[in-house]
Image (cartoon, rainbow, N blue to C red; front, side, top):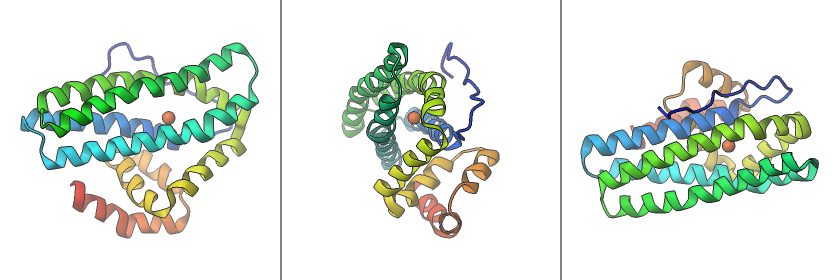
Length: 211
Ligand SMILES: [Fe+2]
């Protein structure tokens, strides 16, 4: 639980941000779980280290995609200084999170479970504030200026850079621990072949590795 985190604002626009919210919720959920595992075990188990590595990879993919394909398109579409300031904040907040991640990497590597758990909780707090800022201040601009077509281009960028092998890991990871409602809505927007692969192969492979 993060103290005084503002509520997620409902955007009554044309874009369906289900995928973004599901990713943000997954980041928060996986960090909680990693911190709890480190506390419980009192050591950095191979499982906790693997979960951390996967989390860091997914966060890197997410932020890189936004920095490459979402914020630049939005920057080109907006003009007001207030709106530009929101985008400057998004990029700055992404950059501010990087040292946290490097610090946790080092603590995991060193096997320092207590310090790693502390770092994970600090990251969870900073990331939660960034994600809520993005949801409440930047996504309404995406909706207003890029619309459904611009959002679809962003989705296409992610699919073309990550490919099928990226989806094979991302989908079971993002749905690990998600509510049935989110899972239903997210699977509904997938192309049928991806939905089938998720159900027959990807989910099983993920569970075999991460439990
Ligand atoms: Fe995001």
